[in-house]
Image (tube, rainbow, N blue to C red):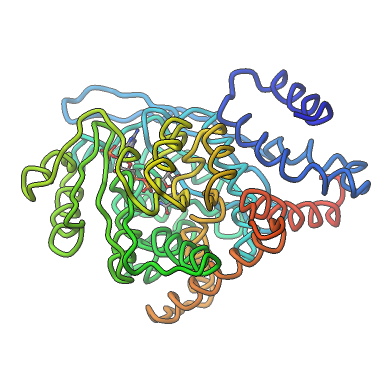
Length: 444
Ligand code: NAP
C-alpha cells in the first residue's frame, strides 16, 4: 500500500480501534479514489476524506421490551447518520445478533457512495439492533419494534432520515415500526420505505435489490458478449435480496442451483424455480429454517456447514452477508470455470477475495450491484411526496434505467484498456459527487 494511504488508514484505525469492518470498507474506497483525491487540491485542502470517514451523527440507545414469558429483555439500538451532502440520510435497519457499531459504520459509509451512484437525492445512513427476530413470536417482534421506534422517532423524518429494511427487517418489521412512528408523531408520512402497498409502499420494492442486481449482471454480460439465458448461478442466502434475484434469473432464462443459510447450502441441479420458490417463501414467512427442509422436499442435496462456492457454476451471486466469500472460495469458483461474480450482499467478499477476483474474472462490488434496493426506496419517497402510486411497469422501467446508469458510471470511471475495474468505477463515481457537494456546502 502507498505510504500516504497507509498513513491515512493508521490515523483512522487509531481513532476507531477495533472497528475492523469499517476499516475494511474505508480502505477499499480510499485505495480506489486516492489518485482523484490528490489530483484535486481543493478536496485535500478542505479535508474532504477526513470528514467523509466521520459520521455526522451516531445515535445509540437502550431498547427494553418484554418477551412472551414476561421477562424483561434489553437490546441496543443504533442509527448512524453518515452523510447528508446529497439529501436526507437513507439506508436500512438491520436486526441481527452480530450488529455492532463497526458493522453499521461500514454499511453507512458504503451507503453514502451507493446512494450517490443512483443519482437520486439521498444521503447515507444505516441503523439497527443486536436483536434477532428469528424464533420470536409476532407479538415479541411487535413489542421490540415499538420500543425501538419510541426512541428512533426523535431522530428521523421524511426530510431528515428515512430508514428502510435490511437483514432481519422486512415488510412485517417495517409495518410495526411505521405504526409506532405514526402513533407517537401523529403524522402519516413517508418516514420509512419498504412499506405495505396499501399504506404508501411502492410496487417492486420487495424484489428491487434482487431485480436490480440481475439487471446489473445483464449489462456486465453484454460487455462480455453474453446473455443470462443458459447460464448457471450459485446464490447464497434466501432472504429479501436472494429471492428477488432468483425470480429475475428464472424469468430471463438462467438457472439457479444453490441457496444457503448459516447452517449450510443445498444444491439442486434441476434448478430452483416455480413452486420450489413458493415453498421457500412460505417457510420463510413462518420464521422456519428453509435450507434443510427444501432438500428433503425436492430431492436436492444438503451440504451442512459448507458454502455454495464449491459448485461448478458460470456466475456467483453472494446474497447473504458481509465477508461470506473468502479467497479460498474465490479460487475454487474460478478453478471451476466461474467467469462473473456480482456481490449482492454488502461487502460480500473479503478484501483478499475481492482483489483476487478483480484480477481473474469480471467482478463487481455490492455498492453498485445492490443499489436497486435503495433506488426503488428513493422512488417510494418520490411517490409519497407526490401522493401518487406508480404502476409496476413504471417503477421497473425506472429501476432498469438507474441500474444501466450505474453500470455506465462504473465503466466510465473504471475502464482500464479492455477491462473494467468495477470497484474503482463505483468508488470514484460515487465519491466525486459527494465530495463536490461537500465542497459547495462549506465546512460543516
Ligand atoms: P435477509 O432477508 O435477512 O436474508 C439474509 C439471508 O442470508 C437469510 O436467508 C439468512 O439465513 C442468510 N444468512 C445469514 N447469515 C448467513 C451466513 N453466514 N451464511 C449463509 N447464509 C446466511 O437479508 P437481506 O435483506 O436479503 O440482505 C442480504 C444482504 O443484502 C445483506 O448484506 C444486506 O446488507 C444486503 N442488502 C439488502 C438490501 C435490501 O433491500 N434488503 C439492499 C441492499 C443490500 P437465516 O434467515 O437462516 O439467518
